Each structure stands twice: as C-alpha cells, then as structure tokens.
Amino acid sequence: MKTEVIDTGKIRVLDIKADNGIVLKSAEDALDILANAGYGYEINKIIIRRENIIPDFFDLKTKIAGDILQKFSTYNGYLAIIGDFADIQSKSLHDFIRESNKQGRILFKPTITEALEIFG
Image 1 (cartoon, rainbow, N blue to C red):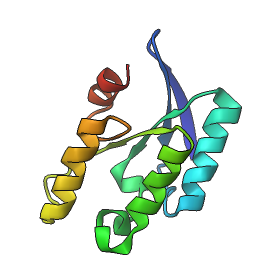
Image 2: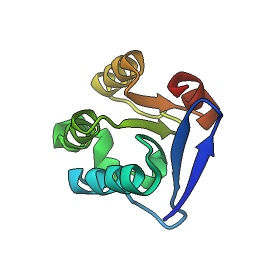
Image 3: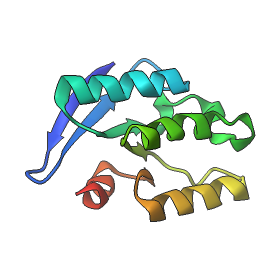
C-alpha cells in the first residue's frame, strides 16, 4: 500500500493507493488506516479507491459497510470512496450512497477532484 498526502492549501487528505488489491476489508482495517493517518500525518480525511475495498462492502446485507463506516464516524474520520458506482443494481445501496454524500462524512465520488471540493 502506498500513500500520498494531498495538500490543497486548505485541507490535507491521505490518498491510499493500492496497486495490489484489497486494503480495506474490515472494521479493524478502518481503525488501522485512521490511526496511521492520524498519528503519522495528523490527517482525518482519507481517499481510497473502490477496487481496494472488499466487494462485500457494497452488499449492505453483510453489514461490512456499516461496521467500517461506524469507525470513521466514531473516530472523527472522513472517507471518500472513489470509483464508478453506476453498475450497482441495489436500490438500497444507491439510497445509501445518496444519503452518505448528503452528510459529507462518507463520500462516494467518481473523481478525487470532486471529493476534494466537498472535503475542502
């Protein structure tokens, strides 16, 4: 897993880049990411790509998304999941994405630029 700090002048965001697969698959992984971002970089805003998240995250019945996102909420973290979500068939997941984007703590955006605009 590679990380890069994006500094816009207003905010700092930790961009997690994983060329080799899944880096976020559990609530424990979320805690590790938040701790590393907070203690290592003093950052609470994280960007991660859809393909680096366990696919079961996007099946709300598994409760993985709820467990992971609860950690971000509890520990004052912000998460932007970057990717294309048009292929998702679940109405409940589309509703979840829409409501998450309204709240602003957890974002589902197609580009990093769009996420930074909301974070900043």
